[in-house]
Image: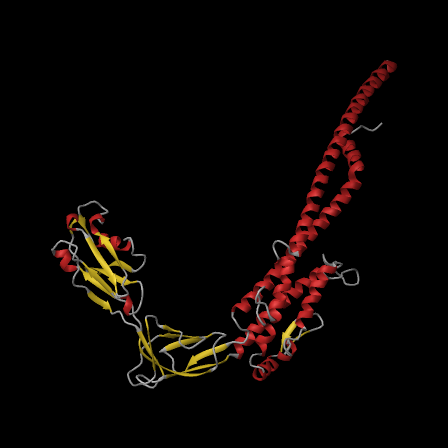
Length: 453
């Protein structure tokens, strides 16, 4: 008679009683995990596409304009979607500068000399600095560093003026820099609140490092055009065009010529951005809805038989074929191949842009729930049906899968308990049987010895 192994036999019998249920649970758990992973992949793909739509809409227009000067070095310009194509003349008379003054080799004075000083700006704002509390190291004297720190930390400063210490060739200077450019940022320091003495005198005679002045430019020729004067070097007088002045021109020089015109390469880049984003989504949908099977040579996608995901894909295809005010993507050289991948013919695109200057924006429109229009708006609103964090189909499906996974986990825990109970019962029984077998073997041995004797 073969020896009994209680552990092995208990394992075999406990497994036999639970293996059918375990196989079913394993299959269902794997299916639930596959569905969860596929939903996550679908959600990520849809969000990436939705983000690309928002970025495209954020530019204000799919069709881009470019602004450029005929001569470089004096100004740069950019054009937004609200700009109008055209030509402008601009003369740069002077740049806006930020006021900066310095006080050289301020004397170290006793703290008792400290008192309030007033710092005023030409725009009418001001703040007070209390030097009586500026002695942070407690040595009884006020250093330039302590005065600078006191100015920077003064209540009411809030970035109006920045103080710093600069040392060059052994000479130390307290430098004050205005927080705003232009004439209204000019700094005036009033030291009349200090006792008469060396510090009051030194603070009353600043050295101007950079004067406070406004930018002055002319739309047209200098002196005869429209004068533009402001504190900033960025001009926005021309609607939709931002001009940054970089260098003043010589008096009497011919004005710059600013041209605002179509930028077909930038427009094509915007179109390509949409196409790339859509093709990435289409590729993911292809993988998730793949029919699979032995003929296809690959396993079926997680949503191969899911009618809702197929409806999502079909609806996006339908939006691509829509007509917007008599124009569609095909009019601008954008088409889909047999696999649903988009491409653009730039020659046809440029020809259509020339024939329909505002047509591309008419087709693409904008995104957003309240302002949605055109292709971008239609897609954005439809994607919300899937991506809405409260009512979207992705959220609804994820909640359903999580409930199934929790139920499966509970069933697995219960089955594990049943397995353990079966195992312990059979282990006890076969351990007793093993003991009985051992006793019988010993008795048989004793009898054989007795008969042999």
